Image 1 (cartoon, rainbow, N blue to C red):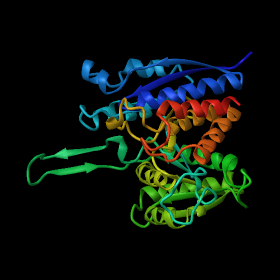
Image 2 (cartoon, rainbow, N blue to C red):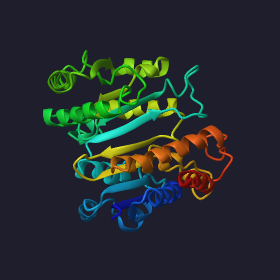
Image 3 (cartoon, helix red, strand yellow):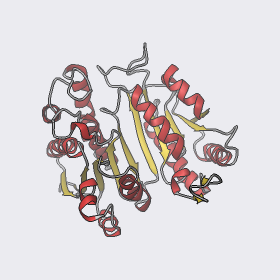
Length: 362
């Protein structure tokens, strides 16, 4: 009997519905080819719903989303809604309430895609960032006193527990063991690097570093370990991206370095990520925003959304289907698209989706 997966689809705002439609198109073709089923349920959470009802993501929706195998998200962000309302009320609430404590961000340059780094190609830009997704400065711990006065004080604390650090490191070590460069036949070692700031953030990253080496020594002695300060990581992303394999880091630093990673892999039009709960419901999305200025024009690049669907399938165990989608995207970037930029691809949004779907079906 064919496996069946319940997928919640949240197209969201701006161009989100357009790119999500193409991801769903490819997802259905992959399911047909590889003999599994996807049962899709759409949810309208986003800016338009908020404008009409004042709702972002109600508690009842969280409980409903727990019943799905995965969530496919388009984009969140509306020009008529104050920044922060939708992001906190939908994205962060989903991540925290569903305990999606890992943000997984592959940084891979596909053939035919331009990178701003001179002399580097797909062989050099091929690594993954594992970002802790539940703690740090994003928990909202802190506040403001004497607001609006010359003596105003703002405090926002970065907070981590050993439990949060350990479970993130566990995921990162396991990921490096299974998907590191040696495992993929591209290097001599599977390497996990901790990105931190131990020379200044001497409490939080002392915790991270001690836990990192304790776990490595006891449970993963075969995995090579490295450490990089976050500022050095940013420099070496640009100078020597080939040094990296799998990187693990906290929430704030992960937020920063993954955007830099998106640029060196060719931009937001190709970057996808997953918000992972290994024991629960995970959510996959293109990294780029809602791009409202392109809404309805049919010119936005859907490849990042398609790659998000690919990551979702791999997470669900449909690795052959995921690889077929990724190979089809690589074929597109190498042989079809003139550019990843909106309006410059040489094809419309739906045409790109059609071409990827046709390649997946072969």
